[in-house]
Image 1 (cartoon, rainbow, N blue to C red):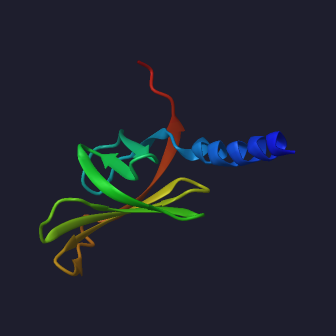
Image 2: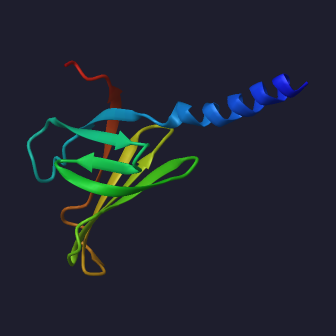
Length: 116
């Protein structure tokens, strides 16, 4: 009986690691500001970070969304909101407490595997 209980407890402890991974996405660029194309978005569930264009974001995980804000301490902030069901990404820029609607945008992403 102790062996079965041990196996169940160990199974539960290790089952949480299934989500602890790095996920790579390709997202469409902001066509308001840039030419068409895609950029990589890396989601690190282990360290709770998102990396976009060499910028680190602190991530919070929800059942339906991943939300993140830029780590840099400045009056200019970037917030990301990724829908986990359809991979739609909202990128919102702030100057102080005011939303920068000129640069903020919504886009779509797709999951990809690294080639090398």
